[in-house]
Amino acid sequence: MFRRFLIYLREILVCLPLALIKGWRNFGWRGAWLAWCDLVFTGLPAPVALPGFGPLVRRNEARSLMDNFCLGELRCAEVEQALRDHPAPVILDLGVNLGMSVRWWFHLNPQARVTGLEMMQESLDYTTQRLAFCHPGAAWRPVCCAVADRDGAPMEVTFADPLEGTTSIARSRGDRRRRVEVRCLDGLITEPEVLLIKCDIEGFGGHALAGGREVLKRTRFVVTETHGSEETALMGRVLFESGFVPFQLSSRSLWWRRSS
Image (tube, rainbow, N blue to C red; front, side):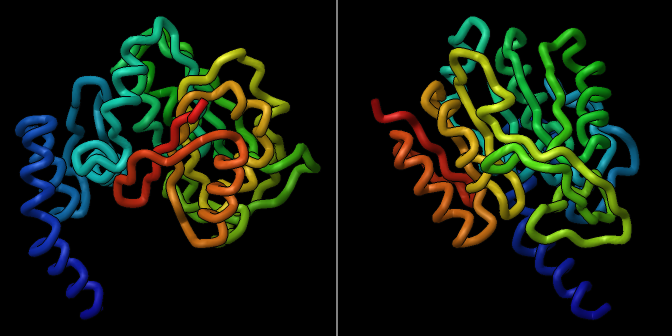
């Protein structure tokens, strides 16, 4: 209990000032309020509506907003400009969770076409519900499966909260079980051009990209989130072999562009 209090106090002293400033700069008073709710209240006492995101009702949404968009983990000026300029960019989201990135992409370009691949059907359903508020009619294709280096037999996953965001093939934990399909990107994605792949799959991102080598040949940008040295090494090897080079590091997120 005392250790948890020390962690809480450290977040207040170390993280809160920057989060308040970044929240205000990006989303005005609502952004600052969400930072306060996340770090001080550790929850949202009431929904907070943001342009492009709709009503945020969960603490994890506030934390995702802070980390990924206010503090810049999933912000890249070059990629965002390419998304705005493209008439109908195709985007693949490997690891949807609460759909914050999906909402942001539709905010940047309402004509985007986004496919979300996620093991937890609840995450896909939640994202679909949120999009109905903030981007009705968006070209959103949810696919419930585990993404691997090849198609395979359904596998069992163990989890606790399906919306918590850390369910992993490699490190299953919790008291709930279900079986999910196992698919590879090359067997799922047929679009002739992909502008962006976001790969945030706990501990399995390298295998997911290895199963999409043909898709990577048609892809312009990739952003990967790292969860360990082994996964990072495999993702890097697959992307280098597919003609990508890294060009921006934002905390845990590494941005790649096709070099040719």
